[in-house]
Amino acid sequence: MKQTILLSVMMLTALVAQAQTLEECCRLAREHYPEIRQYDLIAETEQYNISNAARAWIPQVVLSGQATYQSATPTYPEAFNQMIAANGLDMSGVRKDQYKVVIDVSQNIWDGGQSKANREIAEAEATEQRSQVDASLYDLQSRIQNLYFGILLLDEHVAQTEILIEVLDANLNRMCTYYKNGVAMQSDVDAVEAELLTAHQALSQVEASRASYRRMLEVFIGQSLTDKTLTRPAMVEVASRTSAHPKLVMFDAQTDRLAAQRKAITASTMPRFSAFAQGYYGYPGLDMFKSMVSAKWTLNAVVGVRMSWNIGAFYTKKNNLNKLDVAERQISVQRDIFLFNTQMQSTQDDGEIARLRSALEDDNRIVELRRSVRMAAESRLENGVIDATDLLRKIADETTATLNRSTHEIELLQATYRLKTILNQ
Image (tube, rainbow, N blue to C red):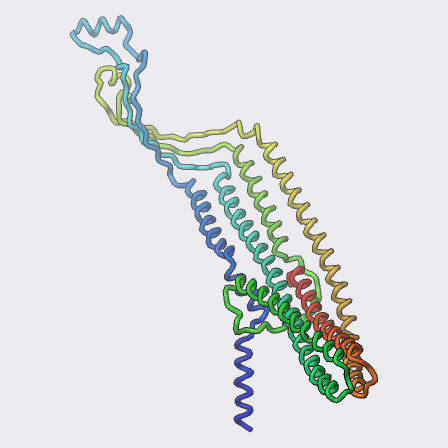
C-alpha cells in the first residue's frame, strides 16, 4: 500500500514538473522578447543626456589662435614722430602683421534655466521610452494568452476526437459481430468504418494545428514544450476597473515630456550670465604703447562678467509653444480613443462572459442526456430496432455536446483573462 502511494506521488510530481502555466509562459515571453533589452539602452542614454546637461556648469575652456594682417594700425602723430626721430629713436608704431594664441575660460553664473530644462527633458524622454516598452510588452501578454488558450482548445478537440474514435471503434467491433450473426448488414459496417476513418483524419488535422501553435509559443518563450503540457488556469474574478494601464502611463509620460520641452523654450528666451577669464600670448599686447615700441610677444589677461541675450528666440517662441499645445491635444485624442476602445472591448467581454456562463449551466445536463441517448441507441441497435445511421447520429450528437461544453469552459477562461488584461488587473 505504501509503495502504491509513493508511486502515485512520484507520478504526480513528474506531471507537475512537466506542466507549463499561463503565468510562466507570459514571464518567459517577456524575458525572451528582444525588446526587453531596450530598458538597459534607455537607462544608458538617459545617463548620458543628464550628464551632458550637468556639464553646462563645468568651466568651459576654449583654445584658439589667429594670425592677421591689417590695412592700418595705431601710429604716433606726425609731430610726435618728428620729435622721436630728432632724438635718434625709431618708433614706427604697431606692425600690421599680428599674432595671438588665446585661452578663454568661462563659468556659467545663470543660464536662464536651460540646463535644468535639458535635464528634465532627458528624464522625461527616458520615462516615455520606458513606458512605450512597457506598453509593447503588455501587448505581448495578449498574444501569449491567445496562443495559450488556442492550444488548450485544440487539446480539447484532440481529447474529444480520441474519445469519439474509441466509441466508434467499439461500435465497429460490435457491428462486425452483428454482421457475422446476420443481425446487421454490410452497409452498416461500412458506415461505421467510414465514420471512424473520418474521425482519424480529423484527429490528424487537429494535431497538426496544435503542433503549429505550440511551435509558435516555443518561439515566444524560448523553450521547448515537447515534454510539457499546458495546464488550464484557474478561474479569476474581475471585480473592479483600474486606470493604471501601461498605455495610459505612456500618455502621461508623453505629456510630461511636452511640459519639459515647454520649460526649455521659455529658458531659451532668458539672458545668460557668466564669468570669464581670457589670456593670450602674442603681438600686439594690451599695452599698446609698448607694442608700438617693440614687436615682442607678450602675455596678456582679461577677467570679467559677460551677459548674452538671444533676442531672436522670441521670434519663434509663440509658434514653438503652439506646436506643443497641438501635440498635447493629439495625445489627449489618442487617450480618448484608447479609453473608448477599452470600454467597448470590456463591454463586449462582459457580455461574452455572461453568455458563456449561461451556456455552461445547461452544458452538463445536455452531455448527460446525449450520452444516455447514445447508450440507449446502442442497445436498440443490438435488438435490431434502429440502423447504423441512427446510431452514428446519436454518437455525433454526444461528441458535439461534449466538445461544446469544453469549448465554452475554455472560452470563458479566455474571455475572463482577456478582460483582466484589458483592465490591467
